[in-house]
Image (cartoon, rainbow, N blue to C red; front, side):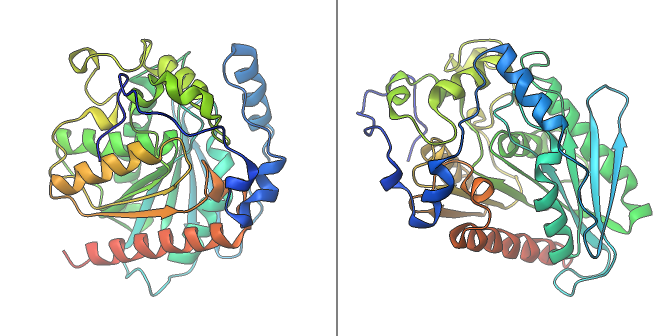
Length: 335
């Protein structure tokens, strides 16, 4: 499968309906308000709501702390298990997690529950990145914030009982795209490499946003018109431009040489806007000799695992992702 292109003239599917959803997800999406990101005041209102997210409740077996970096609006939220789990051997592993929000909204706090659960279930340290957002802070600022968080984690590893060679990167949506780009950037920079990539419905290819035929589909939760805002804000240019005008490490799907990247897990719903670009990236990874596990959920739209977290289909999805990550971090201890 190839990545969607701006000049793709294949017919897009008709407008999506609640009936198209997996039965476990229909109730949640029937009332879910789609994020509004096209105007500055809408993004500011969204960010004001994110700022009201309270600190995570004290979870049994997990210690929480927040570390602020020098640049305003950057830092990490750290979830440390207070007991060991057999699934990950001593010299424990860690996950650097990056939140979603289309590159224009979102906050690390939105994923506190997921991060605490991963830390508790797998016995790993989970470090959640707070990064600056476009359009006020376009590329490369968000990526540089993720690089800074990776370096902080590497520097802090010994004091926190972490094996620096057993650190995975991961994220959801825009965060999944940033995680994929971070892995590419770290490979190019040399030094300690991520042990794995855990990518939830990653936002990988600006060329999808250039396809106007997708605008009429009205995907649940994140439409292609929203996608256009996200990529335009991040790139400060129209999405879908010629390859030689796209900066290195700005768009993960644009990189032509993917060899040497760490094993990846890509999970996405089959009615997610990002479904095609995610499968295309998985195929490109495999063609480059990179191990890649793909988990496609029928009838699942964008963000289903967060919007309907309590649904059976979402719980099963998270469980498969955790199992894969646990296996990869355990395997990296033997290398």
